[in-house]
Image (cartoon, rainbow, N blue to C red; front, side, top):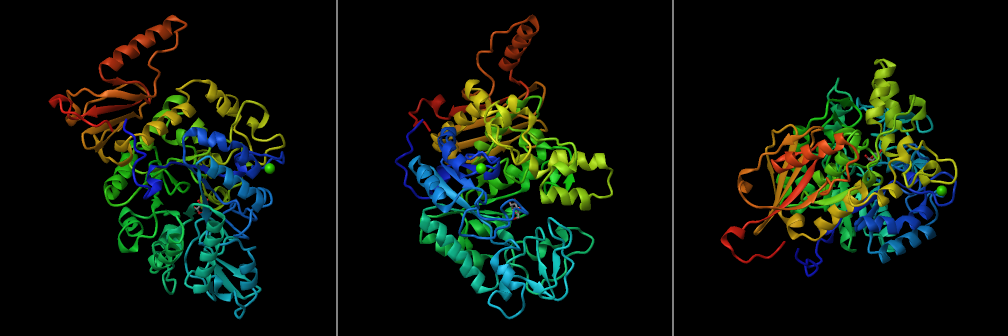
Length: 583
Ligand code: GLC
Ligand code: CA
């Protein structure tokens, strides 16, 4: 593998990968049951050891927690439960000394209704903050994404305010230049402190269509989206924010719910380029529509279609972000993999996305294969979206069906405490954890996987990131998919000059035969990564021994074991004997 350090340091984020921290459930440093910055400080070496190059902090600002941090009441401070600005600066300094970049969540589509701006704004129509939010005498027909209608009456002012999310998350009026100045001042505040960039929350929603026309009636939630998604002034406003970033060496990734790949291009390239990458949602809908609303069985073909659509559209033109989990989606092994084949599917899923073109994000707990939690009743859950879906959106369904839906889709499954070891509370806290620990922590935890050797999910993530980081082909090479219609296999190639990598992932829970794509048929590839150990453990009994023989025979003849993943490297000039540079 060639040395790539001589490359120019432009677009440094392309070589990177990030680790996302949802702080409340990450690590509790002071024993009050709530994750905090003291805990993060102590775990920075661990994060670094995974092989990532940066951290994205989900919001750590003061917040009444109606939406766990995404309802901010002070943009220039740290939530007292998590620490202080002083502690944050210590974390930042230590992260930087370990070579980790730090990006913050910038949540400016809305604030908390307890933010001082809103407290002023709701008093009346003639104070300096009156136009900071979106007020109307009469609501339109929009639904919010989280809590019924998108309008709430405020008796003090005698008007309705818009909230695209929860009632406690009033939307800011971005058409007001003063609000945009506030956003820039928030950005400068953190950039001056030394942070390296922002993940910008639902950023494609910040510009609403003039006059706020009614959405399509009878289409709940989505019927209104056309009037605020990728709105009329979005590029102008984001351009202003981009200019602030240009004053610093700052990186921006936007969250773009429901953004199509075509409109994504307007954010990522050309004269309206205002973001370095977007979080797209298409590949998060291979078993549902918009995460919690409508479910359907997992379809690999849908997943591949979404992956490839974005890869093909952006390669050579813009840059992708790659992710399978974050704080908004249930755990991916429980969705696209198999809890039965926990290690196998967890490692295979890593291979399925980490080697595409783009910058990978890994969500806390994903690297050890944490899975969904099944709590006994809706009262045990805390997420506003889950509660709304249970009590309102699906209210006519039987209880069992609604609870089942919560088990497979609740965002709370991504928010259970991080499983560090098999001691009480999974080593997350010495106190009483703020939320339920998944009972499988005795088996699934960091300490166990550190011990388990190179094929534990954790150590496999490390190997994947190491491989990606040192290969120009895997970083910058072109992407091409093979057999897109195959319902059980995902094959893709990365190619640069004379080197090609072929990535093969089986999503089947039984052995399957893998055909070789034409360009590789008859060529000799070198196996550079496989999620099954080369030497099987010593088999203890006859059944295991027989199974191993079957496995060995199967592998020889192009069969893949359940959830097997392999990467082969091909030197495309080998046959002609030309000298090649190893990529
Ligand atoms: C984004 C966040 C999510 C939050 C919502 C409203 O989608 O990732 O957690 O609830 O925006 O801020
Ligand atoms: Ca704490």
